[in-house]
Image (cartoon, rainbow over all chains, first blue to last red; front, side, top):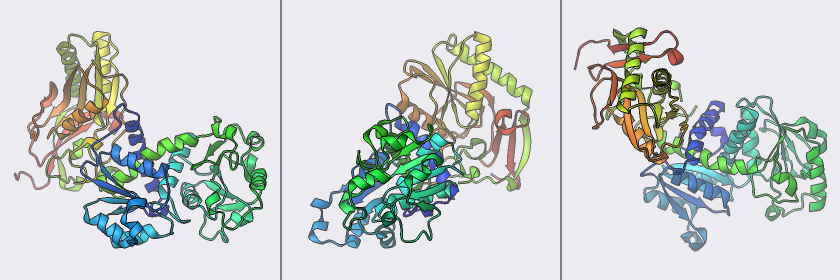
Length: 307
Length: 210
């Protein structure tokens, strides 16, 4: 496998292979010296056209723990500000002998386009409303650690602005690929126009499914992307779709809560629920580094075919 | 992806600079080197040698290299406990990420490294089934330095088949077995392979070239 552009690049066996490899890297990250020489001599460039802290830091930490060299492109001080095209930028990076580009871009499909221009490995770190495959992998990995390796039949609710969410798109697909029953929960204005191609069901009644889930996956309400009002007010959203303390008490005792971050405490999740034992949100972040080590290793190191 | 691709299934493919490809169809059985009794006796002697060399079994930790080294380490620990009445901690080491042939061929971890105790100021006994080029052991030494600073490191192998590519030598050997590079030493252990314990020498169908 050369690129990771979409979670659909991996079938179920491929996702399981990433998870197995992640187990090994997670033990590496727990050591006093959390570093292995596996990718010594390789260079990874992180090219983020959109703001990000956790994803960029997570990838860069992962690459460094594999002993790869990391180049970070800072948009505000790069030639992008002079109007350099995406194609010229990535071809310049390629000419410097980089082995992989980790790219985030506001336009859906940008990483796919980049992959046709350059010969190095391209990893999609989030493109527009399209995909965020490594987030999906770390979500599946984290869920498996708690629900067991076999996710078939696990009932997973993804709640929030599905329509504008690349996380929802990738994570729902990944959970479905693993055999889970995924339900999208959102007001009609935040659901996709059509569920064609989504291996899921959808509802606009969060309360109705509270007693019928194993895992609640909350999405961030993206203030910065709420150009057209998808709901009348934040308060109304919270009252119908927020995981409030009241709703949390109506969940089963074993139900897990995940969130891709960054959280809006008090909006999609109450501060108390975010800190509760049911929340495995910090573990997602921790596992994210190991999952990205596994992805980088699969693309750059092992040369092994991924099913 | 297939298990057959996994590196370090060392009875099949501990390979040095030039990766050899063994497929079962072109390989034929040559000779039985050890049966279950031979193997048991060799392990008994090796356990004694470990105790003798270290003046007892205090402050030891046995680290097996995946896959069969781990099983052998557990057996040695049982024997040491029997002869010296000491529980020796046993761990497992995966060296995939420390190999020098990553990106030359598929290298996948065979298991997860498990270190049962702080190895600082202990004597680490590395345990493997077959010592061949020495590259796996070199990787293991590198892996160890990331984990801690042992007082000493020793190496114990069931079979030494020669053809070292790196200046590495075992402290205790179950069987010195001169081989050709084209041949293959296959260690079978009940707990991993089923059946009864054995060590076999296999060679290419076309016989005695090289």
